[in-house]
Length: 367
Image 1 (tube, one colour):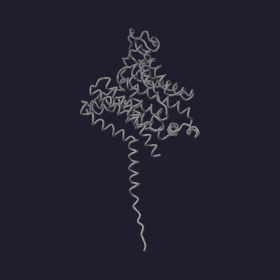
Image 2: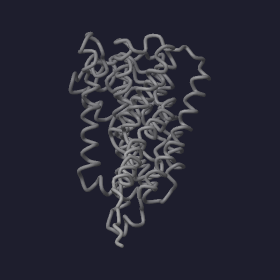
Image 3: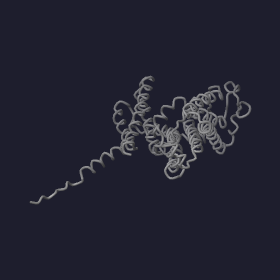
Image 4: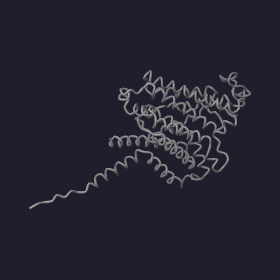
């Protein structure tokens, strides 16, 4: 008597595994952030009057472009396993410093006691106020250069002196935040030239309100950062150093150089973002970055850039920035009290941290 062996079709187990793997990829990737944005907008739009109007969309995008640039800069440091708390101070000091050079008039009663009176600034304006478009471009270069110098200081302290990134950037945040106020005695720098104000302008109506110079700058920065992180040896070194520093060093990654350059990029892009903010607001503000730290860090984490290092993307940074801009915008439209807005943002930050832990566990499980 013979028996025939029947073999079960091997489809069930692999199909189940593929579904689980697909779910893991979705939760750990940019698709989850995009879905989160859509769900949030649909959920709060009945309560936030005007959220889905064209006028509000222009407002959201005008705030998105500078924040996205700043979050992309923060991403370089986070991917490396560090953190840059000083970005807010860089925003404040850099935008004020650049505005001093191109402001067209200064009131002696407000600025005659400042350190730059009689050298960089005077009653008839800043040192580059009569230089037209070339002066504006040079002022922007000086703004970004000032940010890069602060980033160089941070990077050298972390990489060469082996100081903790949190303490270094916390110290420079306080130091340069005070410098920003000291430069102008807490006065805003107004009377900026039209060439500078055009960067953040959303005038014109229709498509022209969306296709702004700020958008162009942000898109160029995003494309460049994506290329660097995904297509260059530098990007591969950055992820490797953030994933496992010791292994990366043994493999030949120049860790000191990577750390310094990451902090320079972070601060440089923070300064560039400050140009977009101040041009839109029409003034150099020494307190411009004071309330931005939670938005920057929260946007980076929501966008999938891990606090543990070694993970993140430019697209994720952009989507995280978009979520936080929409969050702030919707809370303002609902006319919530100031303390309630901060409570909500604080809860979102905690949720983002939990999300980061969950994503890393999913990735660890897949490995």
